[in-house]
Amino acid sequence: MSAPAYEVYAIKYAHHERTASQNFLGGDPHDGPMPMDYFVWLVRGAGLEFVVDTGFNAATAARRQRQLLRPVDRALALMSVAAAEVRDVVITHLHYDHVGSFDLFPAATFHLQDLEMQYATGRHMGREALRQAFEVEDVVGMVRNVYAGRVRFHAGDAGLFPGVSLHHVGGHTMGLQVVRVATRRGWVVLASDASHYYANMAEGRPFPIVYNVGDMMDGWRRVLELADSPDHVIPGHDPLVLERYPAPSRGLEGIAVRLD
Ligand SMILES: [Zn+2]
Image 1 (tube, rainbow, N blue to C red):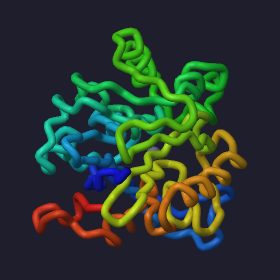
Image 2: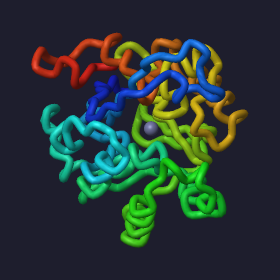
Image 3: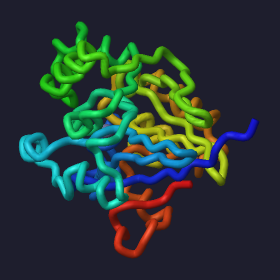
């Protein structure tokens, strides 16, 4: 059986100037600028097209002082994708920067891990340190989508399409999942916040927003098992992604890169 070879894109929609000490548990002794980029990912091929994560909206960007460069529907339109017509959206986890613009996808089924909904609606959300990256309205909105029959839950590892699978890794949140995609260069893993930056995973230094540090570190091993090489793992927020991969066209330089 030969799996289809999908095209995979990272599309940047927002940015945040911050320092290294904000990106590593316990800080960073050589503190300095270490900005964060925010992405959604597009996978297409074999007559399929789906999106991974939905990004946040302008109101949340203003409240959290993040720089929204382009609303996610406009970002996708640059790739000739109409957000309103997308049929499947994988939600890696329910943090505001990954699910906040779900309303831009009225035709979509959302793919989510059981444990993520449990986490976002359970006992730990009574604790500021664990709920800080969740927005209650996003979570309530996804609960409404459950009642509307628009959420497809997965538990652990799950095949989504031929050559596309979801894998629960937890760590950063209880139910974080990563996406493994067959491409012309082999298995690419969209790690999302299993590793925010290349450095978190490569240097064994966890990101400070974390539910379970041990699970996060096991997650690094898991994504390496799933990918064809460390270069096939795509971190969730690293500006280096835009430097390491080519733009699909001149007009998209600094905005989108092709990962396959
Ligand atoms: Zn994130």
